[in-house]
Image 1 (cartoon, rainbow, N blue to C red):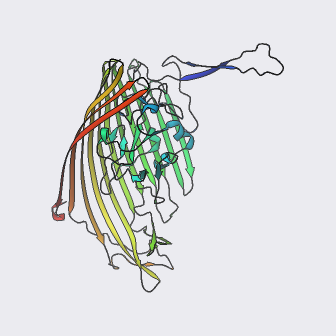
Image 2 (cartoon, rainbow, N blue to C red):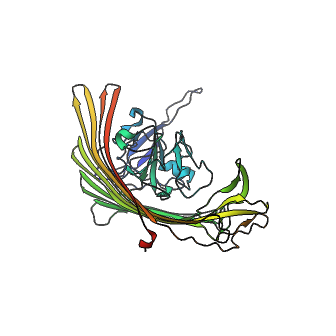
Image 3 (cartoon, rainbow, N blue to C red):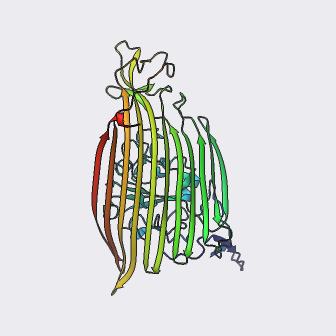
Length: 491
């Protein structure tokens, strides 16, 4: 992709009226022409429900996470994606099935959750178990991409383990791309059903801004903001963007259950030269959701309307942050180096209550509880070198890379099971939720798991006329350690 000194081109449409003599039984149509405004001379036009500032001409798209600057994904139907090949490849030439949910689609549907974003994508489903705001649980071709390490952000894997999984805010996404089918040739470990990649909103070199206020059922109140533009005095070499969400909401469950969130995502782009771009991407997020979202099923999968949780011992509080960068340098128009890096951190505390069984008296239900504290730290790095060349009549687009991923998960867990003194029974008639003291169990030994993964990959897209052959391969080295620390040694 060739980047210009200005990273935003706004398309303006104008119609020229043509009025020749028209026969009585004929209809003359006006001529419609589309022209591009000079870069930097026009302001973006907001679409209903939000801004679409991804720029580009719809025929190019920055490698997700690479190159900095706008994503280049415009309109409702993207024509180019980088997820399948890590290069700017027209979707019609991609060897796998790819769907891109653009910012305009997200705006017009006023998407409220990340799982809502993929509701109309073929082969993908969300909320398979019903209402569950705790995780971004998405299935592609029947496989869970969350637990199978199939979620990516800006081209880098979002690692989760145990109960600790980073959550994504859809308002901060420029596009969501679904790649169906195996992708291990470029990405290594992942879901056999496919992968999902989120492209973060990035700075543009035109001033813009919006503020939204929303309200809804179950005492839902939310405010969004998104603004940015060029940095004053930088002569068009620096731009910034700040996106944020603040939500306070209840849920249909009632009983004091919350679905609250605070999210802020600063971003900064610096064009060091016409051939070199650096973009900083960061985020800080706090969420508070129910740790229990289900209702009790009796043996034989007989559903009941008894909520499993209890407001006296409830809540999943999660704090997460990420900071990283996308760097690109063009040695020549046909030789490009990209480096993408991100550091992710997550801390959570979860308290939950479960109904274990109905008692023989038919009036009460036995319950147990659990208390979990966990911390997850991860680093991901991807180095790419893209080269375009020809061997006789065959045109090649080759990409070679080395990537690295590391995570460290520490967790402690405690529970009371079968102890009606610590976790009193639920009265099925009075439904005495929140009226009894529930003891907090002591935390057990701390378990820690670390994993390092190094991968090398190579791909060649060879094009001969209308025939395209895509070949890729990858090799990974994985090192993992798991050990426990006695509770007495943990402060």
